[in-house]
Image (cartoon, rainbow, N blue to C red; front, side):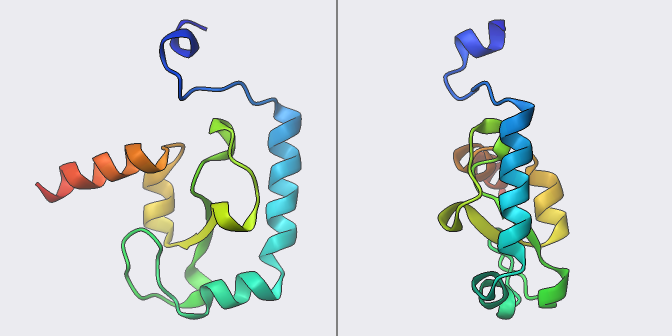
Length: 102
């Protein structure tokens, strides 16, 4: 609880909310919109070209941080970036990438 008091970027998200958003993401994964989003085969984060079938769906603002399964919060990402990003917010992820480039 102390972390939430000192970090304004931590929010409480219930298990029920996370389940509901994951279900919405699964539904979107089978839409034409998502197939078109993956068709170019480009990872949103690193820009690498990979097979569209190897792209994963990532929440830019993670569910555990209050993100929703809506079109402007979902991006195709390679498994490597998705696994490394985990629960980071966009500004935290950018800071991580900047540190790797230096």
